[in-house]
Image 1: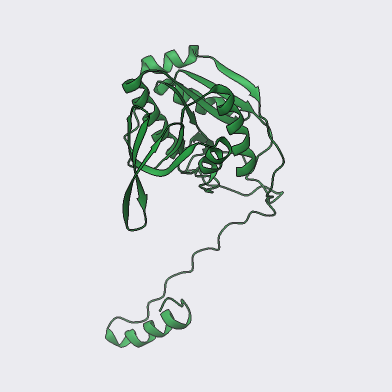
Image 2: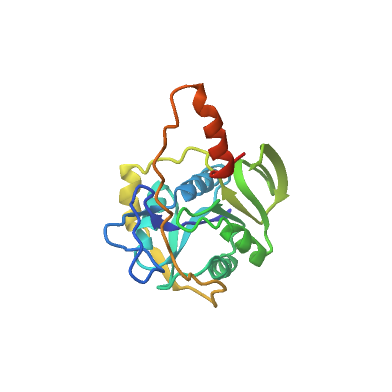
Length: 248
């Protein structure tokens, strides 16, 4: 089976983000980048599927040369090959999905895994858009995945519970935390990844449909207030919750 995994190269969630002077990008100084955490679940599920059905797992990432670090991480986990769609500009979700769909279509991938979202922009839509451009079936926020021949049985998270979905290949699956436990790259895998070729191609980027006007940090958290030490403070607390916090 021909399986693809689309991965993002994102700032480490432990990194303190600062906004650059242009107020449209982040200050890159001191920022460490990692594979998008949700994409690790996608890579692991692709590898598990390959181990059951045979075939090949290809990792695809769109960005500049720095993205090779993330591709290498997936290769060290056990993916067979990597493709870097080179682009120096930051596409929006629609342009990104179109470029990924073009590559997936040309590669003839039957099953495509994404993380449910990237932790940088958190749009949670790239997988769905890619599926729409490919005219593939799509199941999102998947926490359990089974492939039986051409049939997919997936369990996905919904508000207040879970639902079981059946569909068929070709399909796009977006992975949620809990789908699996991503494996660690072994020393053997890390050494093997250094020998695996990352194919570079120009990204087929179209026009962006959205534009970042300005980035700003959230307001600083207000200090807490102690209204009293006994039940006499309750009326004032209720008043503040109603009039200031507006939560009741």
